[in-house]
Image (tube, rainbow, N blue to C red):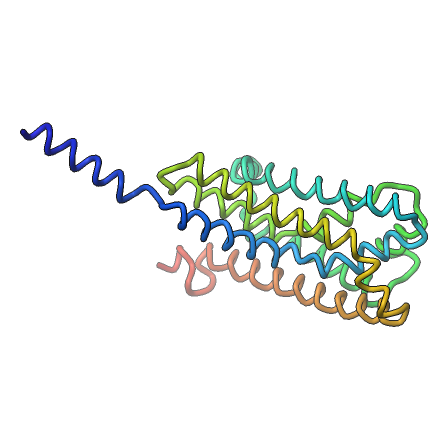
Length: 239
């Protein structure tokens, strides 16, 4: 009787812990919208058009496809090995945000006031491949995406169904990358009605906000780093 009772309790506990399909759908859309907001295809459109200035439609499609494939591979790589790399090199996540913020600020300055020596201006008319740097990384796959993807590993580990949770996370990443790819494919049509001055204005506006995002990452990364050593209140050391 006791054995049967224990077995029934185990079944009930297992039934309580197993997530419902609706919960998995909710998790998918939550992760999808979060990743899409962080990747921000609208931010990548002016950069993409700037780098692809003077290139043909086939070159644009090939570059957009390669850039999105690179983003997908980077997301999967950091999903699987992100925490291992940080521990291996002894780099805290706060420092990843600071360095990524510096890179974003530089790209934002190049967008806002482009010069002949800037990273983006060097890509114009260049026969080199820009699908990885700077388009895929750090424009689309920046420190915010890295921190988010690494944070998803803890979500998967805490789940009772590792395989299903991992599949949901991978599906959300793939869906966000596909939406970004579609946005890049129709980037010229989206901004064609605005005109050359409109494209220039949109590029400078995006550059301003990219610089602001970089400054925010530097600030929050610095605060998090100082809190971890108890220099500021609110960190683990302060407790």
